[in-house]
Image 1 (tube, rainbow over the protein chains, first blue to last red):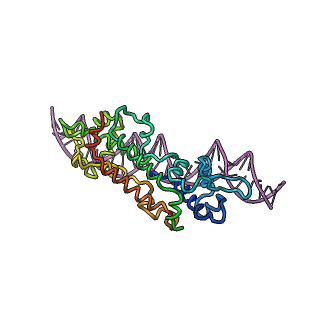
Image 2 (cartoon, rainbow over the protein chains, first blue to last red):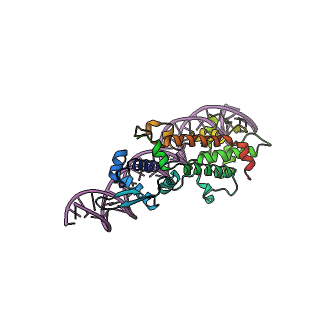
Image 3 (tube, chains in turn red, yellow, orange, green):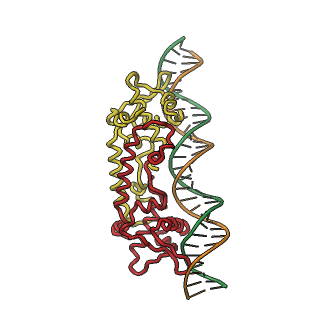
Length: 137
Length: 137
DNA sequence: CCAAAATAGGATTAAATTAGTCTTGTTTTA
DNA sequence: TAAAACAAGACTAATTTAATCCTATTTTGG
């Protein structure tokens, strides 16, 4: 499976935040975790990663929480996945030829390169705003 | 990573067989494993799976080995991956909604469905003959 | 007819990755 | 200054993937 649980949680959390940000901008990990029925501590780790990549801002202290800071129509699935786990790859040898024990072109390289780009393009097309509109939660 | 080591071995083995079948049709696991520098026993397991799906035929006994039986220009990456590990999926929830703890449409479903189909189409386009031509081994 | 060379298939083990937790620390605000 | 929040690194657990082991069974040449 290409897309991890953590990636999934990240996307759903951002969707939740987008869909509930008419009246407030800051959301605690606790609130989001409870609403999505996921582990608070695990989600905190995920938010840390999103914050490190500048998708969200996190504020400590009472009244703290996280807030989306990148334009929500510019945050794509690609950005989120990259922040959480690194870019999802079909085969690691695409990006790191060294891990292959053979030193010849196995014939799959061209195919995987092409298909990887195709996949990345798809991931770049979908924004968090798109997704929020489609989610019926 | 979407494509496992076993899948990779399967494809390379078939490429090897295609590229070396001018003079003989039957190849032992031993020969293929040695040429590709992979574990003989592990490869045997992989060949079993390919045989169960009717891509190759395997013959026991001295002078035994495996032989491709499906038209080599009809064996696609999709067929091989499916035989070895099952169809590679972006997210399992695409094929099994039950594994999701939430009972709402998270917004990613449509996207993942579309992209999954796109990926599968790509996998179906590439035949083992194609790959053998591109491999420089 | 039997020994050697093959594959079959189930059980098991090992390694790697992913998922989740714990602990300690810092920041903020009422 | 205590409570509520996030930060970050170490750790543990669970799952998946990779690889091996063991006991058949089949085939063929001598």
